[in-house]
Length: 209
Image (cartoon, rainbow, N blue to C red; front, side, top):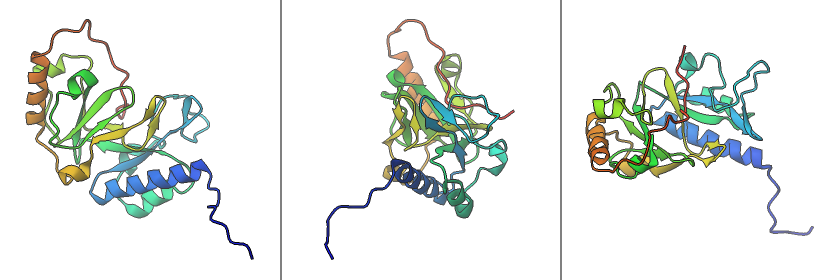
């Protein structure tokens, strides 16, 4: 018998699926509702439904709002065969304030903050607080509340993976008050110089019908 130090080859899709499943289970263990999202195949997203015409990131299940949750067995089953994007539903455990990078880098780091590869910053906050007028009137600021979702790390979007700027564990999974985070963002907004017209962002989620 000949011994070797070489590790057996594991297809990338299996490694990705295991990594995504582990992340989904970790979020669920802290009470964050999870649902599977379509995953990248080439330059478009595939949810496995043959009649689906959505090419961007979207929930893989028609009944995603009703079936999302923190049940460990269900989540493990979802990621058993496909490397689904990990989507966190909003409006229950937390809301998300999604802002452009120019504003996000000046925001507080008192709670979990996720960042997309194309520069959208997502601040997880306690739910229920509407946007302040200074933020509500901006087209590049989005509040994700009930009926919405965000892609969570380590999910991959066309521009690259979503990452944690401030991991939940660093703040012991505590969520800051939305009003305080908004106040900080509004202060940063007021002290910044205009940088041209405000553009409508490509929103990360699609609200439930």
